[in-house]
Structure formats: C-alpha cells, structure tokens
Image (cartoon, rainbow, N blue to C red; front, side):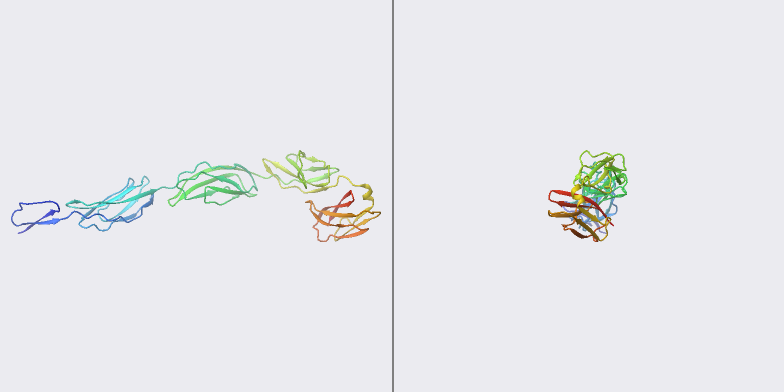
Length: 349
C-alpha cells in the first residue's frame, strides 16, 4: 500500500519510509484586488465584497475595520456597517496547510450623516409682508446640500447654507429650521425662533376745516407728494402748503398701508379766482373753464392724487377739457397766469 504526504514549497523532507510518496504543495498565490464599494454609510447593511479566486487557497481570511461586521472563509463576504463603524482598511489573504499568501487591501471610507448646524443668523423680529429677509448658517463640512423649513405663511427655497424669506400677509410666528444633507441622509437640525408681527390696520384720514385727522391715535407719520413730512407724527396735521396728503401708521416696528389721500388747497388768489369759472363739478366727460378780463398767457394742469399731471394745456376765454378718460376720484386743477397760481379741487364721477 502507498501513502501520500504533503510537502510544502521551500521545505526539504527526507527519510520517508519505503512505500510513502510525497506531494508538493505551494503557498496561496497573491490576492488580487478587492471588488466592492469603497465608500459606505454608517448603518448600511449587506454590502458585498469579493476577490478573484486565489490559486492554491483552501480558505480565505478577511479582516474588517472597527465596527464593520461580517465573516467569511470564501472569496466573497457580506459586510454590515454598524453605528460605530469607522473608516479603515479591509484585507483578504489566501490560506492552506502551508500557510498564508500575500494579502490585498481596500481602503474603506465610512460616512455618517452631516453634523449638527451652527446657529442660524438673521432677523428674529419681522413684519407680515416683509420680503427678502436673509438667513444663513455656517457651512457644514460633510453636507452636500441643506434643507430649510419655514414658519407657516413664510416662503423661500434654498439648498445652500443661506436663504431669503418672504413673510406673506398670513405669516405667523414660528421656527426657521435647517438641516445638513448628504448621500447618507439628513443630520440633526438647528432652529431659530421668529416673531412675525401683524401689520397695523390701514388708517383713514378726514378733513376737518383746515386740519387733517387720522382715525388712529398713535403711530402716525404724515406724508405728501414730496414724501415724509418731518416731525408730523400727531393724529392731527394742518398743512401749510398745497398738496396731496396721507398718513402711515407704525406699530411693533411694522408699518401699515398708506391711508386714503386728501388734496389740500391752503389758499387762493382772490383776483384770479373771481375771473375764472370751472364747471360742472363734479364732472363726467367735459370740464369747462371760462375766463374774463385776462390779458396774460394762462395755462392749466390737472393733477391726480399721486401728484402726477394727467392733462395740461393753454386757456382761452372759454376752454373745454375732455375728461372722459380720467379715472373717478379727486383732482387738483392748477391755473397759472404769469406769477399768479390758483388751485381748485374737482371731482371726476
């Protein structure tokens, strides 16, 4: 009977008893490149890796980074990345009765979700109707995009670390939230509480003799066609010059819409007034201007409530002005004769 005994490469064995034959066995060949994903997320399971079959290997030895879990004695392995997995090298080598072959390695990067954002910066006290309010958060190193969540009634869109927000008329107080996002998911968020203040009601003004009066006691600011009137912040205002007047009310840092506009004439030239007739008033389609005893060149301008000249021209003894295209409302008619100016109020039906 013949017996066989393995003989490993590199060993010299002698003195076999008669009838025993030796079989020469080599160490496993060098491991080839490991195939599989080199970048994975914490919590990812069932990731498959493989290495080409290693000549002379009867089994395979796999080593994994800390927190990566999986076992195998074949040329492939299934790996689960636990919550404590960290980046590191995966290695594999062939094995047989003579020992281990040369290993192959694959550098593995284990990624987590983005870190928590820093503090959001921006206005925390805003008004309904306020637009393009900027907010920003420090860049998150591992985030590839950002997710913003806004209070009800606020609108805006961004995938970066900054956003512009519009607070609509129905916007309410609440938190602005931001989260970092990458291929592994969404991280923890940061929140900034926002107080959204309601706008004051739109005021109404009336004319009481020579005085204009707002229906709001506090927070008034008076304007005319030239803009804000300095120090005109009381409920009542007495104009000293001709013009179009309105008021805006401010409360909790928020401003109302402008009130109605009243056109004011503070004084008339009596001589010029006696020589001019303007009718009908209210007017519908045609306004007639009659002049008597006027020798100097005379012109007229019709001015709307915004201070814009809508019709102008020169006057004769009797001039008819077409007004059918004018919008309904109150207008000023300005008549100029040399250095003399008369202002009259007309109503378009």
